[in-house]
Every structure is written in C-alpha cells, then in structure tokens.
Amino acid sequence: MQIFVLGAGAIGSLYGAKLAAGDNDVTLIARPDHVRAINENGLRIEGLEHETIHVRAATHIKRIAADALILLTTKLPATSAALQPITPLIRNDTTIVALQNGLNSEEIARAAISGRGQVLRGITQFGAIFEQPGAIRYMAKGYTLLEDHERSARIAAIFNAAGLESRICPDIKTEAWRKLIFNCVVNPVTTITGCKVGGIVDPALDRLKELIVNECLAVARAENIHLEGNLLGEMNATYAGSRNIVSMQQDLARGRPTEIDFLNGTVVRLGARYGLACPVNEGLTRIIKAMEATFKDNRGGPRLPPQELPTKISTRTGVRAPETSSSEITR
Image 1 (spheres, rainbow, N blue to C red):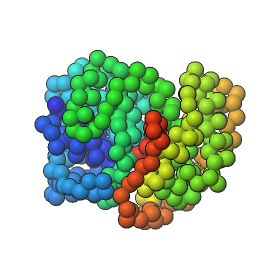
Image 2: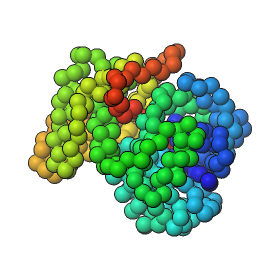
Image 3: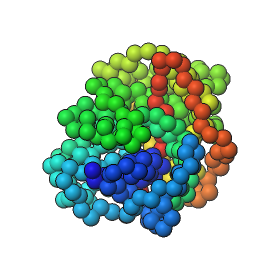
Image 4: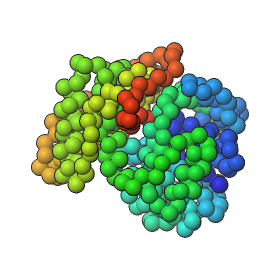
C-alpha cells in the first residue's frame, strides 16, 4: 500500500518507520531539516528500540496512487494548511486517518478537503519524542484505535503486521473524549510542573486531577458522552513509571504554540455553550498560554528532562488508559 505520513514529527515518524519495515511504499512528509536528515542518513530510532530505518522523506506530496493511505499526524490547528494543497490529488479511494489530539479532528479534515476521499478518526496510544532532525525516541508502546468503517479492517491488518497493534473501535467518539480527558490532565499539569508523565501519579496532585476530570465529565455528559470506570485510577495505574514527555512540554521547549486551545480550551468553550463553568480547565489554559508567550521566541527553552532510562509503564490488570503522545506540526 502507498502510505504518506503527513506531519511526520515524533509519532508520525514512528508510524512511518514501522510501516516502512514491511512491504509498504511509505513517504514521510515533514519539515525540510527532518527530510534532509532522513534522506541522507535514515531515520534513527532510540529508546525502546535502537535501529535506523531507511525510508523516503519529502516536504510535499506530488502524486497519490490508487487506494493510498494518508496518516494525518500534524498538530490539529495545522490540519487545513496541510491538507488543502493536496486536495486536488485526493481520489475517491484515498483514505485519510486523522491520528490527532482533541475532538472532531476528522470533521476538520473533511472540511479541508471538501468531502473528497474518506476521512476516518484514529486514536494513537504510542509515545515518542522528537529529539532532532532525523532522530526520534520511542518512549511508550501502545495501540491504535480506528473508527469502524468498511476500510478499517485492511488498515488495521497493515498496522498489526507492522507491529503497530490496532483495534477497530465501535464508539470512537467516546474514546476520543476519554483521550481528551487524559490529555487535559497530563499535558498541562506535567508541563507546568516540568516533570515526566510518570510524575502525574504524585498524590499531591490528586485533588487537582479530580477537579479537572469532574469538569470534563460534566461537559461530556452534556454532549451525550458517558464514560464508565474510575478514570483517575486508570490514569495512575497506566502512567506510573512513564518516562515519556508530553507533546505540550516538547512544544514549549522548542518555542512553538501548544494544543492547549484544543484540549482544556475546548472543554471550557463547550462548557460555556451548556452553561457549565470550568474554572480549573480555564485556569490551566491561561497558565499555558502565558507560558507560550514567555517562550515564543525561545530556541532552547526549558530543558526537557534527561532520557537516561527506557520507558516503563505500570498497568493494573484489565485497565489500559491513553498514553500521552506527541505529533509534531510540519508547517
């Protein structure tokens, strides 16, 4: 299958490397410096695995073959800018899987390409860090959820064959909300405290996490989304010991805008629509926006925690919560 990874930063490069190891025709669409490094020296993967994958990389898509797959891994605000230039190339048999944070990424993608092709929602639970052009660090092994569609089974089979565990999800909207809630907690809190993902299990943060989750659940219920289970318990069980670094912290370290408006900011805006105040999520949004302003001209940024040890995720039997991931913007 011809596969393009549109927005190949950390997560996109990881998916591309895994898929390229098989019989797929893979091209990573990324920033010029990342493209140049990959084409000259291959894509270096460190962390959970150590290898160099020789995969094609380019700054734009020139042609899309029949039955091609496009993995959309840009930041959510970059969706339209990434897709609109390739809209004339998209065929009816082209499938785009939106592997992005936030809600309604598939709807944004559909609007950007004026209904061409077929856009499916995907949710990734893998974790990776963009270290430098041509190199990523594989931090957490997870799985991919795919929206239930007639095209999903083939994509899932290709992912599974590449070692990217994939499942077809009958209720993708609920799972998108689940990941949003975890991101609303883990992304801003570990960014503000400057810790790795595993630091979220600190008991001193329990009350704050509870307040964030309760506001999110109230808004989800207003949207007719009902999440079962003990979300705080799942969060602590899954993230204990994780040495991953959230994408929000990585963005600030590189002086880039974060996705806070599409995480906690979205909860605040939806809450206002239903007359539900979300002061904690609003407070977190304002803090991260202030941090963005502070570091917008930064090229070194706050130092990322050193990665001297491999990732270790502790999970309670039968419980698996979303692992925070990074999808770097390519524009």
